[in-house]
Structure formats: structure tokens, C-alpha cells
Image 1 (cartoon, rainbow, N blue to C red):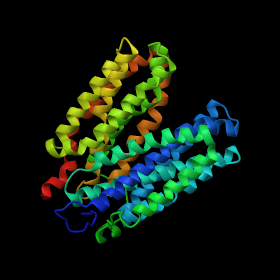
Image 2 (cartoon, rainbow, N blue to C red):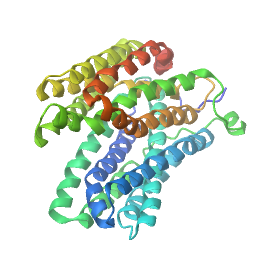
Image 3 (cartoon, one colour):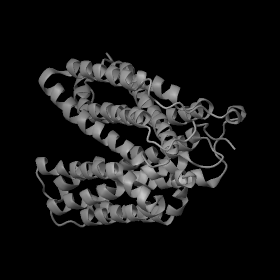
Length: 394
């Protein structure tokens, strides 16, 4: 069996290690949040049109997907501590390489590298969170993802203000200071979860058992609607429900806010009711919210629907990640990298296909049909039982 060698379990909480991995999630989300308001500035800076900008954003996604399995392989050999430190150290330099790119070819390289650092760090910090969960013998994954959402909100809000009031260099300077300060704060506290000796001797390969792929498919099904709300909810309110520009922005804001709040309470819910029951109820709530949004007769009803959907989707992906990191006989890094790769593939690429379909049938129908994906994930919820593995050691 290949599993991560952890320190002896302790009955007391481990605030230092938990704080460190939570701050890593916060910092990753903070950089992603800062990138969102930077995109229009970047477009003007390089003098490119929307089509070329779309390819540049695609390079970011490809960089993430290429790096994720590579980081998973490193974690399987060496644990998550050192690779998480290294990737966090590279956050600010990769940001600067991208935003200071003098020409389009350099910008493509920068987008690929920045996406790779963000995506690789995503795998490493989720693997580290699984190790902390197992040592603490309680769920923390949902709150870790809550910190990512909080970081994204902070990054988008402060990044936009800095760009508007002081310019891009001021935004980048603040990012460098924040990255340096938070990395120094967590450097010595990141949990050490070295791989077991037998794991180091085994050749790395894609999992042959079906369960990791099933969990990856569950993450894929859950993240396609999430990416669709991110990319298309505002346009849906604007074009099909005649909302103003200001009101249309509340669609994703409501979704993101309820998702963040629920992620901070999701661990308590999972500890109380178990991963399978929590996943099933969450999938039904997420599906119901999107149905309400898709058939909404007014912007206000649609916003309520998106908010309800955010409550449901909040805990689905964290449970899938926890389950993947606790699969017997599989190094946590391999399981998490596979599930992360498949899940983010859906979030990055499916919305483009949805845009093509929506041109023919409308976004309302799309949002009303997307809940079918949640129902399929609901049917496979029993495969997430390994998310509760820590309970077996109590």
C-alpha cells in the first residue's frame, strides 16, 4: 500500500498546521482574484482584441492542467510540504513575469507559467489539507476552500481599487509584499507529510482502479455548472431578463458569497452528518437553485436561485478532494491531482461549449438543464465514503 507517512495522531487540534494551509488557500485565491480586474488592462497594454485575449486566458488554463499531474507525481514521491513552499515562493515572480510582459509571445509564456504555478499550488495545498485532516481526525477541507473564496473576493476588490486609483505597478507592488509576508508567516508551519519509503520505490502511473476516475468525474460534473455561473450568469440577467449592468453583476456575487459562507460551515456539517449524506443534500440544493435561476421570470428571482445554488455547490468539490486524498493504496498527491485535473477541465473548457449552445437555445434553458449534472453526481455520492476516513481512526 502506498500512503503518506504522517506523524502520530494527536487528540488536540493542530492550529499551526491548519492555519498555514488555510493561508495558502487564501493567498492562491488572492492572486486569482487580482488577475480578474487586471485582464482588461492587460488587453489594452498589449493592444489585442477579445479573440486573442481569449487565447491568452486559455494558455493560463492549459498551464494549470499541464502542471497538476506533474505536481501530483512529486507529492507522491516527496510529500506536499516542499513543493507547496516552492510553488508559493514562485507566485509573485510568475505574476510579475506575466503582467510586465513587453510583447504578446512573452505574455503567452507568462500566462502559461502563472497558470501552472496557480494550478500546481492548488494540488499541493489540497494534498497538504488532506494530511492535516487525517492528523486532526476531522474535516477542514471545506473551510480551506472557503479561505480560497475569501482570498478571491479580497483580491478582486482591492486589486480593482489599486488599479483604478494608483495603476498596475501599485497593484503588483502590493501583491509582492503580501506574498512575501504571508509566505514568511506560514513557511515553518506547513505540515511535513513525507511519502512512505514503499511509495518512493513504486513507478508512478495513472491509477488503474476505477474509484479515482469516478471521483474525478464527480468533480467534473460539479465544476461545469460552477464555471458556467462564473462566465454566463451576468449575461443571462442582462440579455434575457433585462437587468441593468449593476444588477446583472449580483448574480455571480450572490453565488460566490453564499458559497464562501457555506464553505466555512461545511466542515461542521460533514463531521455531523458524514460526507455521503452531505454530498447528496448539497447536490440536490445546488440543482434546485439552478432550476429556479433558469426558469426565473425576473432578475431578483434568478439572483435568489444562484444564491441557493452557491449554498449547495460549496461542499461538493471539497468532499471529492478529501475522498481522493484518502483512497487506500493510492498516494494522496496522485488522487488529488487526477480529481483536480478532471474537475478544472470542466470548469475551464465547458463554458466555451455552453456559449455556443446558448447562442441557439438561450442561457435560461442551459441553466435549467445543468442540474442534471448534479443529479448524476448525486447517484455516485456513495463513492465519496473515503472522505470520512479520519472518522475510522477515532
